[in-house]
Length: 236
Image (cartoon, rainbow, N blue to C red; front, side, top):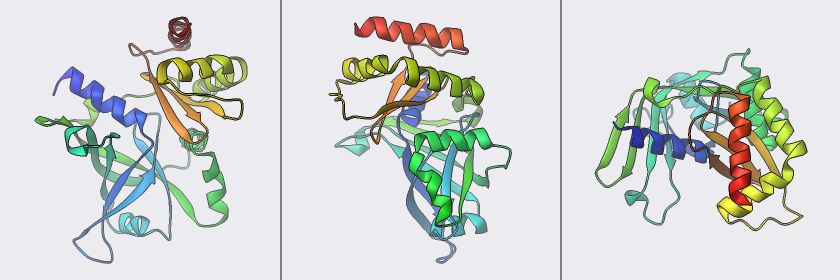
């Protein structure tokens, strides 16, 4: 385990918003079952998923909560590029975790309506181990305590930053996307910040997640403002 490998694993984890959920089949005993699920992170950095009771993976979890979620880096050669597997137990998200639910809805706003059609419930995966492969020969196992980072802005603090950026600094969000991600942003495109954490922040351009990483971790609103100002200056 190295500082660089953990940083690279966290960067992949934060950059993506979906993964392959592997559960133990309730129908075919002893066999693994794979499916694809979106995820966001709770205040402790654990993945949160929203799944329906009619889905096979939910039935599997209700019988045996052992699971994993595998996150892949976009690449034409997946074996030579990064991938991350978080192994743990799927547990129902406690009722008092409304802020984690709201964070999920910000990332996936259409999911608010899922409860009207099928019985969807929130779960989070509590890791027992993390495996990261950064490429050929770059193979690491991490303890959850070494990998997970709590969000210093979780809750109302994050809400305030997100609201402020979307209401008062939309031009800056456009600027970040154009300069740092070389994206062509038109007037018809919907750009919105949806989350901020110690390592960076998440923006959606229409339905595409765009991740921006800070040069160094931050822990409060003052440091967040300084990091945003630095990004704006660097783009101008």
